[in-house]
Image (cartoon, rainbow, N blue to C red):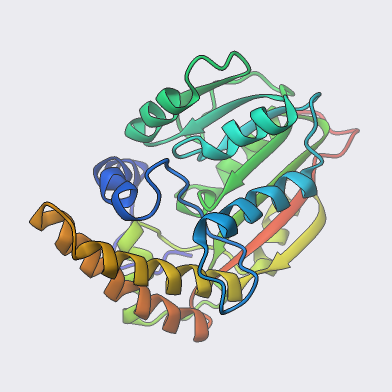
Length: 281
């Protein structure tokens, strides 16, 4: 499965996201919403509304309500879990490999008694079996080097009959160009991923039942079109040279990322799966 010029470890992923948090916050979203957006069309430039639409779609697909106990794997800055708790009154926990993002999430959540965040790996979760009614994730699980182990862990911590609803980046085809490796995979320390069909097969191997799968590559392309423009504009007012250079480099990568999407070297999808009611962890 790996397609990058080197094999990245969890330490590589953690270090990258710890070090780049402030750069992302400076132009993407100062409150930490750093996920792919679901846009109304090519003319839609409103990233904030689009990323909120993604969260609302996942919550609806998962059937989250006030009785839910939710685990957000790869929770990043905590926005999705905080939104779920505030909107539905559910309880939840967030887990992420980046300590800096967990700190941000804890600060953003304040004293909300219904949620908490932990710095930990998706391949070795600090939870007992059958704990959560739902596991959710946005654009994070692709970065886990040992994906099969993370699927096993998610299955373990879900209650029988529980739902796993997530969005994630895809590798639609096996052959990847050097351009895509540089601007898509190596850029975020991503070893490689699944096609949408391959993802479903991997989850079925872990014991899940697939309920829904969506291919959303057109929304991924619009996300990077909007973010590239935003990074270019905000680089002009950046107060530090390093931040300005990072934004300009990211804006240039966004153009190459759009080419990779057109060439089926990069994709995005949503999947909802269920742990069978008769399953044992």
